Length: 293
Ligand SMILES: Nc1ncnc2c1ncn2[C@@H]1O[C@H](COP(=O)(O)OP(=O)(O)OP(=O)(O)O)[C@@H](O)[C@H]1O
Ligand SMILES: [Mg+2]
Image (cartoon, rainbow, N blue to C red):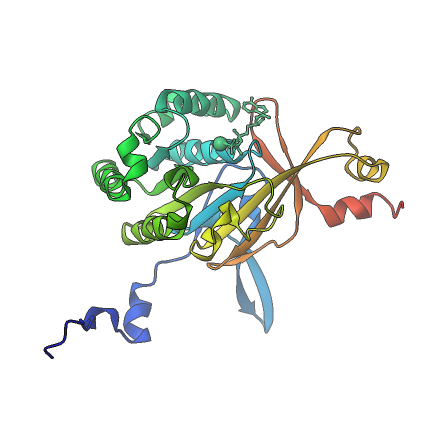
């Protein structure tokens, strides 16, 4: 055409052609008690809608796990990696905050708490130490090349990044572009992704608005928001059955494009051995409280 603009013909396809390539939807177990049952698909049976639990996060989704500091995000990421590895699937774990040996320690602790054998997981988790190698944090293309190398060498099925926030430190206007590149990359290489992102304490709790602050939630397929609150009233103490001044942890799935999901806010706990366990939704606590005011 003699124009400097291109026509990308391979981007144009009929629904029929696209449909043939659509991946099958199934659940990827996370090993986080209570979480896997929060995702479902539906089918119509005898004119009625029937829920079918996925028993995991949707396959090939990219999940943004977001919350302020000390809300259990890294523990959840570790539980996911240990669970997948123990099932025989290779996981690429990109650590941006703590150097690999420290994450190794955490993974060992999580495995022990979950009753998984070290020998069953040690060769299935492939760590990329972006905490110790600044080029991986500062140059997204070097990071993508390195993840590609790990995916191809070890044939990984999923990628955990803890955290994506560490990849746009001091260049927050780049957040969307960096997360978009990582997201597209997961799709291209057929990886299920867990992207941890950090929220500032000033951001509204339990909404993914500002999931990590920078509209990351619009890019990913699914956002899980975790928060913690202090029990500071008698009412809250009664409701949660926790002493005044203690910490209560809350989580919710703030949208998932790939499948149906529980939309309620749940309480959760971190056990002494560092395992995240999702508890009942708040509305059930209110019922069991027996209408107390
Ligand atoms: N055995 C344990 N091992 C590790 N953490 C534990 C354990 N038991 C309880 N915890 C609690 O879990 C918290 C760790 O949460 P985690 O490291 O997953 O936070 P995070 O959301 O990743 O925070 P950050 O954004 O700062 O990385 C600890 O601060 C502690 O309060
Ligand atoms: Mg962390």
